Image (tube, rainbow over all chains, first blue to last red; front, top):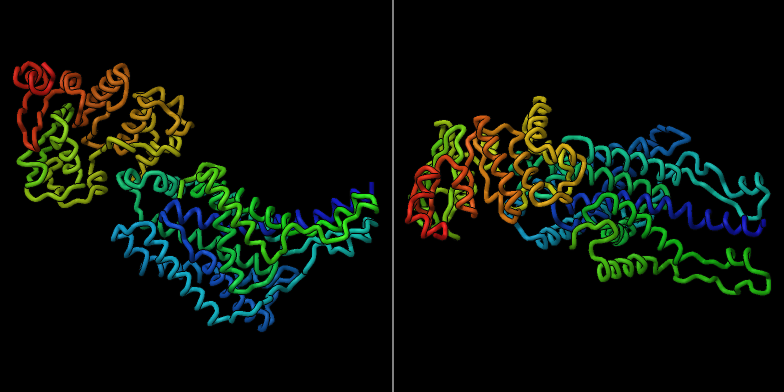
Length: 337
Length: 226
């Protein structure tokens, strides 16, 4: 019995809890991608780097605050800097939209042109972030690290396996729940939210109903950039900040949006968790897990790892390709790309 | 209201006018420019000559959205509802420009189309063809327009639904709204109309009262199939 319990704790510690946190971060990013796709009607390749940009501003401010002795311990100082990171990312998005995307909107450019433009924005943002903060790994977490550490858990329960629950993971999950509830309330109940859905559904009729597209576009950027920055900061707190990693996050985020059904906010959330758990379960080494469950004679000698963590992006990619082949509309019947 | 329009391409010297409480129908063969005329009135087609007037005020330079705000309600021929929104949300979007309390208009539309009240929380995309048209008309009425323009509202619905829809259109006209309708079902549409225009190659060929057009032998043989 204790072996089974140990195995379960092990899975919770290394798969369930990290998967939840990672899934929530992906979901917040994918929500932004899906919103931009349904309102501006293009796949925003710059989303990962927008995330990096907002996070970078937050990190710079966090360092400054830490240096100046500000602290909201036990919470990380980054939370104090986060609103300014959001403002910076939103401002940047709006400036880019006004100066670049709007020009192509007025031209009535094809979606693929927008995608290429976003690629350009992506490279620009990429360069800015690396130029300002460098390419190395940056850690900016402070405050209480664990809500419960593996050692504490072991001494309380007396089990062989420990269950660690980091504060960054708790923060991620709680923030994601609050944001998702707020976003859905906004989209379903408010006049502006309904207008956004109407515009996404039928642009011409929305115009005939007097809905101002420029305002809808502006609100979409504000929401998407805010969600991206929050997701980026949470990811950075949970793991670490490295511009290249954020650029790479683009793939799982897109996979999440498409798997769930692009244009469907519910789909982005479901897709985020699906991708996260696929990645974590496929790259997890099951040696110890099986060691607890199987009799000693059958205990595996190798790691029992399906895929090295270096290849974790292959998981998103395979899922993405499969979904596009088998069910291009995604789980929640979004649009076909 | 008097809408005049002139262009080399599609519409030549075409004049369409509707008065308060009047039902006016525009009929004609395919490609006669019926829908184009409606687009022109709405400002979705650049005018080369002529003008569009609403209550004597020239609105030729206004953008389509501004004309809607000025009091022109439109039911486009296709994609005239928000399929992923509920019936009630569709109607609310119709009233998007209104800042006052529009619950009275909402009640009025539910009285006009009782089935919509029943299905108010269903997605509009799940409704039948006739019910969708009711949503589309309801949405256009939410701004309490002075003119309601319908582009082939009975395309693709059954004859029974068509009759009912025409009855509702007459009900709407009695509330003092001018109704301008482009129709394929020419005979039935002319039956309920006060006046009708027969458009051929972008020009007014005949314009008379509905019953007179129905009685006109030339109109009958050419456009109503005998």
